[in-house]
Length: 183
Image (cartoon, rainbow, N blue to C red):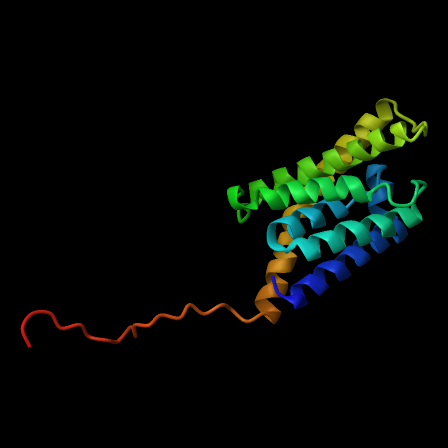
């Protein structure tokens, strides 16, 4: 991933937090806001370097917490835990398949709120946990799972449009004739 793609991921992280805070349409239909930060962390973990992943987790977590009732910085640790786990195992993950992207987005969107809930309880806060929380948690997970392949396609189109394709250079020309036998 080059620096242009890294900047694009960070800008989309900012826009995702902005749309989540300012946008009200999906919240009216579903009854819950879909968090796009875990999907962006999945993309940054699979396609970005450690610097890009760190910037997405720290900046995205701080931007998200500044608009929520969470203490500032509490979302950074769950996002970083998920992102660095994915980054560590990225060589084992087939990340071009849509169903793998969906499952990773689903898992990340389910784990991040759960880890945030655990951190809030450990800080002495008393979050509201009831049956409606379970419905919202599952809806957020499915929404994040569905949005992860969409974000992958957006970034693939971005990369195809603005990045140069890599050229494999060989020492042999394709039109070279190899003569075998006696000269």
